[in-house]
Image 1: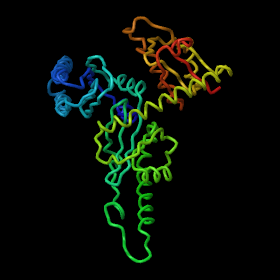
Image 2: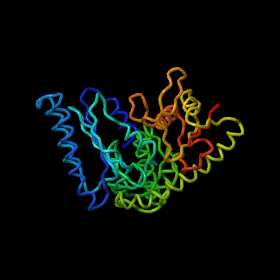
Image 3: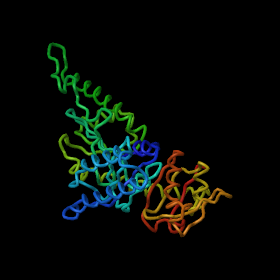
Image 4: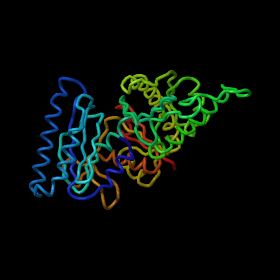
Amino acid sequence: MNRHDVRQIQQIEGYPCVTITLPTHRTSPQNKQDPIRVKNLVRQAGDRLLEEFGKREIASLMNNLEKLTESIDYRYLLDGLVLFVNRDFARAFQLPFSPKERVVVDENFFTRELVFALNRTARYWALVLSEKPTRLFEGVGEHLTEIDDGGFPMTHQGPGGERPLPGGIGIEKTTYRDERHRQFFRQVDESLKFFMADDPLPLIVVGVERYLSFFNEISEYRDHVVGTLEGSHDKTSSHDLSKLVWPLVQEDLSRKRQEVFSLMEKAMGERKVASAPGDVWRAAQEGRGRILLVEEDFHYPARLDETSGGIIPAEDVNAPDVMDDAVDEIIETVLDKQGRVVFVDNGQLKDHHGIALILRY
């Protein structure tokens, strides 16, 4: 799951678009109830559709939904599941948090749960360098998912990889092999560009010392590398790899939090900090947001004040004109305007009412 996926889903229009969300379980015996809950929600979706359409009209949609649910491996779920289905599209995503159980039928897919996951969960890339093959993983919290797209996994096909090194007088095999490895990792870096351009997340690089050295030498993304794990992990499972990679991500998160508080202290002296949701909202909309700091569990239901363009707090979160969480809207605005977002522990921004924005000007 990445921002490209969310944008793709948000662009799909046309009634009816069915979204199903529910909490799931990682372990047995709790996960035995998950297939039953999915089946019940699918039935609920079908009943909702039959109130407006005939069976023939929704046959293709229901067929897509049934095929999608049949493809779910209930043994390996996270904390939540979301299904997006219409007549021409069907996609499922696992979530690292527990969403509400719901069925939504609308002109568009209900993507708030995905946006929440993108905004509130540590995300990163993990690149495992190897000849056979180099693998790319998307990290969401402690969970790694291998990418099978954009050229990955990628195998070194040339001499020194799938093909033997040439022999003969005058050929320095070590030099020749090293140059072929550099060429291979340039190809890896080129394929990585597709993912980093759309979702420039922190990067963890894994591999033996030689490969790490080659990658650091040739990569366009060395500045994105926040940690390295030395060793051969060609065949390490995503589950076992996550246990080794996640501590490196946590170290980086801790480092960034310390750095950002130092930056905020300096910015406060320069009067370049907005505090509290209303002021932060206005500054973010104006494109002034450099770094947004948010407490992990801070939420702020609000209404848009059409007169001032600001926001006002709302108590009735179910009212049609109320944003479930203005914080998510602020996060998206800051990111869209090339700012950064850093989550901090609860209570660390109590003097700023849970949220603060370091300003560009």
